[in-house]
Each structure stands twice: as structure tokens, then as C-alpha cells.
Length: 466
Image 1 (spheres, rainbow, N blue to C red):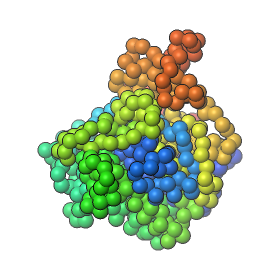
Image 2: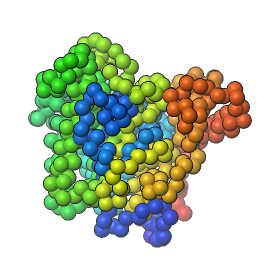
Image 3: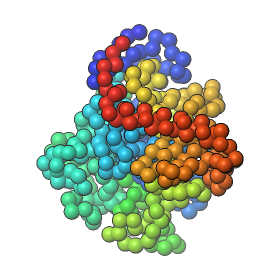
Image 4: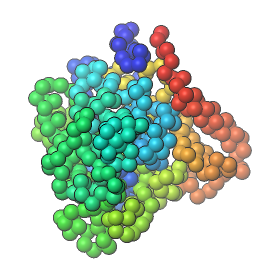
């Protein structure tokens, strides 16, 4: 085995022989793009049955690869899920409990850091929400103090066009609701001042495409994280998109319109990959960071205005650990390795991104606890049931999900049990009828919670050398 010098004194180990699924030779490693919407509901897209919101770009993308019918965000709120995407670990392991809490710790190994070690050029675009960008310049809720400083360029990203938190989905630098304007940052003490008007998803994609073009020109594999702001509040759609939804009320016009605007940019991205002749060996994922926010009317200035998302019938919404707060749209496309038109009921979660990508690169995971798994064998049909469980925590609730069962405590006092294959909408609590299952799952939940606490104390950052 060949050790590579990595980060925090933890080696990555190249597998000479791997049983982890498809291991891709160095010269054929795919370009990787992780796309994510913000507060998009499971039922907000055409490929999951929505007939009102126009999402032809995402629908075509879904047909081109595999759709995960049980894809889970790492948390029911945004910041923790984002952390899980790039670390493969539940965010309770490093102190990101909720939105605007905690920061990406320097000791965490991010997928962008690994990508750089194996020859990729890396970039982050859009909402970061895992730490502030300046120790001196006020920015949004927390920027300017240095207390939560952890920008993307200190977490493995070569290039950035990033905001610390949400911005309006149209004219993103205008009509902001915070005392200190949120900026698009490109590096230390540097933020953008041009091409910031109109649709925010287009503003972002205007930076994504040149990054990709430049990587292709240099014949360098690229890793791009593209985290859209749509359809998080402030929800605003431009005139073209409002016109598309005239028959609906004003709130729905804006909500539906900003999703369609984002969808157009997904289609634009994929057309560019086709033009550059790199479609076949580019792996793209798409998901949302949590379920839809609470439905509410109002004006642009109202924090919860225009949130009109649909869960697809699942119970709960953003901020709760029932399926509606966690189950989100999930797609993976990689034409050279994943057959088109696939659906799977295999439970997957955003923590699986890190572990899947390291597996296809042929690397063992660093010696610390991981909450994700390699999805490639599941996509290939080599395994049909997820081993173990997926754990979820937010300050007021806890839950674990297995292939068949879900245990949830909505108040950290009482426990509910659901058999998801026959009750995906969580209508029948069967805890009283199955005390043995509840007992075993509670034991697993409490052990996992304790393990997360130990991780957050720094146990995982101790000497991990062989």
C-alpha cells in the first residue's frame, strides 16, 4: 500500500486491491460536480411528480442517470447538511448543530482537500454557510468578528464565488434583509462587484462555466461544488419567470419561477459539458439541503415569505426529522459508468458523497468515524439493503433510519417507530407493538450520539498514524 501525505497528519492509503466497487484508474478519474438547491422540497421537481413547476433540465438529468427515491439530506437544516456533503461525517461530530452555528474545523478532512492531493483543480460556487469569510469586514449575520472564520479557500477550494449565507434569488445584492450586506467573495478580503444583477443562479453559472472551460483547456480534472440559493428566501423571480406562472398567486409565481430559473442553469451546465465533450466522464449529483421551508405568504421583506415548497406528501418540513424535513430530490449522473433511466429505493444520504468518491479514487478512508458509505455497489445492484443506519440530530430531535425502520424522538422524551416500506408518510406509529425493535434502535441511537460527542471533543483528531 502506498501512503500519501495528507492533512492533520492523517495518511490516505491507496488500495492495491479494492473491494469497494469501481476503482477508477488515475488517468480516467472523472470530473465531479456536486449541485445542491436550498430548501427545495422532494415534491418540487417534475421527476418526482410535480406537474406545476417546470424543471425540464433536472427531469432530463434524472433520465440520464440514477434517481434515489430515498435520498436524505444530512440534516433538516442547511449548514449541517453542507458539512456532511464535504466531510462524509455527521456534523454533530464537529460542532455544526444548526444553521448559523459552528464552523468547519481546520482538523476536518474535506473532499476538496483530498481532490487537490490527487491532482484536481477545485472550486466552490454559491452558498457556503460553514463559516465566515472575513475577520474584519462585516458580512451577513456573523462576518467581521473572526469568531467563526472558516472560508472555502481554507477548506481546499482553489477558486471561489461564494456567499456565507442566503441572498435574494433575483438581484442577489439588493433588497437584503440584514444590517450587513452579504457579499459574493472570491478570496481573502476580496468580493465581487460586477455581473451581480438578475437571476442569482445565472450569476453563479457565469462563474462556473469559465472555471470548467479553463480546467478542460489545461487538461486538468476538476471538482466543483455548486450550491444554489434557490428557492431559499428571499424568494424573488424575474419578469420572464413570473410570466410563466401567471395563473398562480404571487407567492407561487416567485417560488416556482426561481426554481425554473435554477433549472435552466442546470441545463445550461450540462449543455456546456456536451460542447466540451466531457459529458461521459463527468459525475454530477443533485440534491437539496433539507425539505421545504414552512409555507407562508407575505412580502419580500418577510423572512418566511413565498415559501411554497411541496414535500410530495411526506410528513413535516424543514427543521423537523420526519421524512418531509429530510427526504429530498436525489440524482447521480455519470454516463460512462451509470446506466441511464435507473431508480433505486436504496437509502442514501449526503454523507455518502465523500465516501463514494474516495472509493472510486481507490482510497481507504482516513482513520476516523464516517457516517457515509460507498454508493457504487448499490448503484450497480451488488447490494440491495443499506447496512447499519443513518443518524440524524438537530437540537430538539434525534432519529435513526435503517433499510426498513425509522426511530424518531421528536422531543428527546418519547419515541416513535415507523415501518417505512409500508408507511413512507409516517402515519402509523408502531412503537408500542414492537418494543424489541425500539429497544435495539434506541441502544444504537444512544451509542451513536455518544460517539458524535466524543468526536466533537477532538477524539478523532488525535494521532491516527499506522
